[in-house]
Image (cartoon, rainbow, N blue to C red; front, side, top):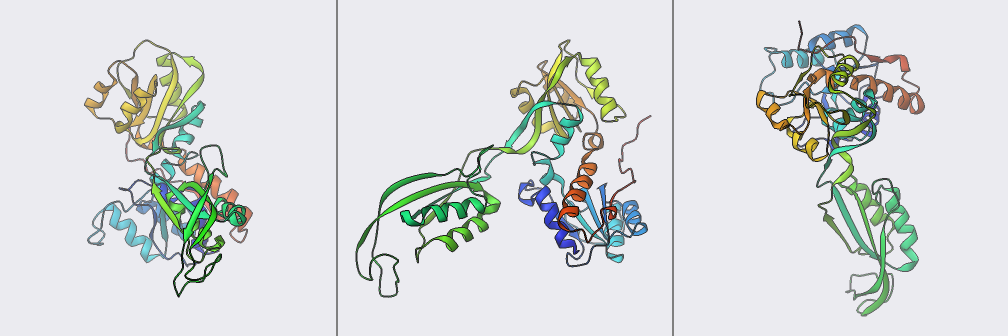
Length: 371
C-alpha cells in the first residue's frame, strides 16, 4: 500500500480545503509514492517521535500540529524543527499534518473535545464563511434528470442535513450557431428558441473540479452555458469550535474539577466565577481567544479553550466564565481519534497494511509542565 493511498483516507477524514489559510497541512516531508511500512500517529512530530517511528519501522508519521509551520530558509539542524525534518529525510520517513483541516471538521477536534465532556445538542460555534459556491446551468428537459443526478453524485446539492437539493425553473433559451457549430437542436445559422430547464445547485468550493467534470460529461450541448457564484452563506457543518449542553447543570467548581479530570489537566486558569450553574458549554481546542465574543453571542455559560493571555480574562465581562485548560490538554484525544479512523477505513479498503501497523505514539510531546 502506497503512502498516497493513506493520504486519500486522511483527506477523507480532514479535507485539506477545510484548513485555515494561515495553516500548513498535508504532506510536509517525504515521497507519497513510497510503499507504506507503518503509520505512527502523534500530536507533534518532534525528533523523539521520528526516533520512535524508526524503531517501530513506520515510514509515515501522521501528526496533528505541522512540524513545519512557517518557511524554512535553511535546514542545518540548528533547532527542533530542522532536526526533526533532517532525521525524517535521512530515514525516508514521510510526515503528514492535519491541524485545522481536522479542527474545522464537524466530527473533528472540537467534537472530540465536546464528546469527552458528554455535551449534547452540539453545533459549530463559528461556521465557516465563503466556502459555498453555486452552479447555474441550463439544459433541455430530456437531459435534466441525468445531468442533475450526475451533479449530485459529484457532491453538489448538499445543504446541512439534506442532500440532492436543487432549484429548477422553466424558460426559453435562444441561440444561433456559426459555420463551426454542431448544435444538438436546430441547424447552423438557424435562430433557435427552445424550452430549457435552469438548474441551480450549491456545493463546497473544493468540489468545483468534480462538479464541472460532471457538468461537461453529462450535458448534451456542444457549448455548455453555466455560471458559478461565490456565496456569502456560512457552512453550518464546517467551522471552528463547538457549543453544546450538559445533560444536567453543574455548579462552576464541580464542573471545572470534572473538566480537569476528564481532560487530564495540570491546572486550569479561569476568570472570576459568577455563582451560576453551568449548562451551556463552548469549547475550542488549541488557541481560542479570538472566539470569546462568539461564545458570548452563543449564550455559553463557560468557554473552554487554551492560550488565553492576561487581558483576555477581562473579556468575560461577567457574562460567562473563561477557562484555559492548556493547549495540549484541549486536543489530547485527537491522535486517538486519528488512529481509530485509520484502522477502520484501512481495514475495510486496504487490508494489505495490517491494522497492527497503525500505531499510537507513546511520546508525550506536551512542552508545558506543571508542579
